[in-house]
Length: 241
Image 1 (cartoon, helix red, strand yellow):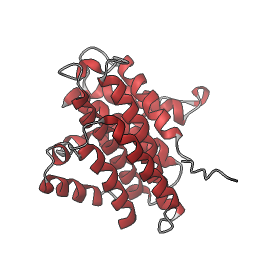
Image 2: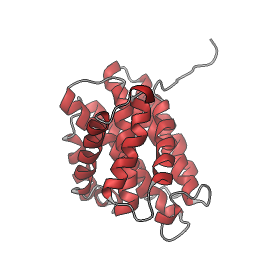
Image 3: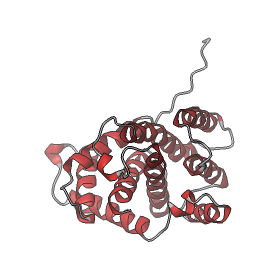
Image 4: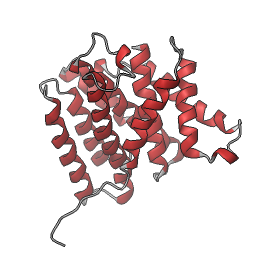
């Protein structure tokens, strides 16, 4: 075959992330509480985890528990400050926090740090320049022979969420879809892409790391875990920053 195709098998994670962000914001009340965010994120996740005909009230408990635990964890850490103030010391703190998440190998952590370095690099001011960097990073993961198939799963989930969420927050900040716009003050400003996008990535990373630490396994559950974390991270930052 003449075309060298490199496809992310978990690309659906990015689609679910963006659909979930839309679902959450349109369902939130005017002055949302943390409980409202947990409820709306959980409601969206339930549509991906259960058939409506077999979804029982008790199923909501485990979903809401995981979302609430993630929100609690995010809220006690200055994740964005540890990235967005763009100092060596702060980024070091961020990396140390990620290293304690539960990822399997230094190779995984190396790629995660590369993903975080993109929104954390304030020298990149043209959003269009971010997309080829993300695409190359995704390709590098797919081709990396040092990573096992299992090690690649959370990284490729993160790659899918990173690319689609960048598109999403760019549209939000540029006068496109205005669902999250009221939380971007001053309006509109490309400067707001960075923290909203960062928290989308951080939430996904933290959620997948916690999942691996608790279960000790990596599989397709990483998709839902990553999406759950991404939604919780962005919504938490947007509303309670």
